[in-house]
Amino acid sequence: MNGLRAVLVCLVFACAVVVSPATAVTPAAAATPRWSSLPVPPVTAPPVTVTDLAARGSGEAWATGYEHAPDGLRPLLYRWDGGAWSRDTTFPGAGEPGWLGKVQFVGDEVWIFHNRAGEGEILRRSADGGWRTALLPRTLWTYQDFTAVAGAAWVVGEDETGLKVWHYDGATWTRQATPEGVLFLMGVTARSATEAWAWADTSTGTAILRWDGTAWRDARVPLPPNSNVHTILLEPSGRITLGGSQYTDGAARTYLMTRTRSGNGHTWRTTYPPLGDTYTGAMVRGPDGALWLPVRSDRAFQSKYARVEGSRATFSYGPDRPNAIDVRPQALARSGDTLLSFGTAEIYGSKPNVMSERRGG
Image 1 (cartoon, helix red, strand yellow):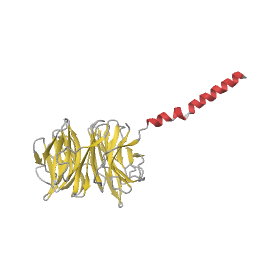
Image 2 (cartoon, helix red, strand yellow; image 1 turned 120 degrees about the vertical axis):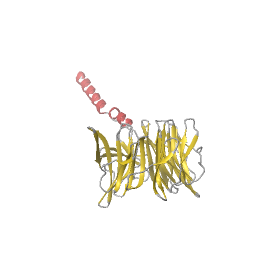
Image 3 (tube, helix red, strand yellow; image 1 turned 90 degrees about the horizontal axis):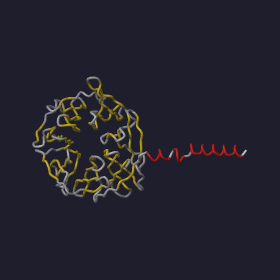
């Protein structure tokens, strides 16, 4: 009888070990990366507009934008050193009217587009922390976008005579022609000095252009009917991912297109993940291989992010922010094995100020 009781006790103990939440659930839950808030030095003249965020590994990231001072716009630049955000005011024109645009890493340097009191220039920061500038040859009415790679940079915009595409070869600026019928370039990005892509408004609708080292040509991308383009991701693997909106029956829905190699050519595949009319301009490829982008949150006190694989999307929320009435991440970047976001948070009774969040780390 005592032997039977001992066997039963052992069986009960073994079952308890198998189903114990402490051993079966907690480790898996603890391994799931979560979003956490990162302290950011606030600006003195909110509201704030965030323009771009770029990271190189886990130890360096830059966020750009501008604050709305009483006498006009003032440029904003923040630097992440792997442990904390700090504001940088050492660049030329930091205290003058203007704004900062896209950030690019070119070799050991950081390149940033700067609208300095209406004049366009490229800020270049060397590895030793020194700044220098490359001025555009002509002032434009509108500076739409900028991109830079080793040996080349492009600035697109408009002046009183229409569309302008300026190309920089490291020493001089030259104007580049676009195909007939192109009215406006909405964005530009590049993989190398001989491969750049742009999304354009043309006389027949939206089109994708490609620079092949000699000329800009129509890339013949089969975009969905009645659609526009928000962004193009050129990835080191050679994959190209394009995001935009398609308008059907008066409503917009987000679509994604991915180009993959097929035989001797390439094939474009289109998906419609459940993202509503989300703007995909801040979309990035995350460390987990999925696409990530901020989406409109249904919670005033939390940000919201979408993780997209193919036509499927899952969602996660940022940390609670007490008394917040609008938390809006506006830029994302992969930082090593984590994701960084930068944007604004509006606390009740105040104007939107800067905020940052991180997933993982």
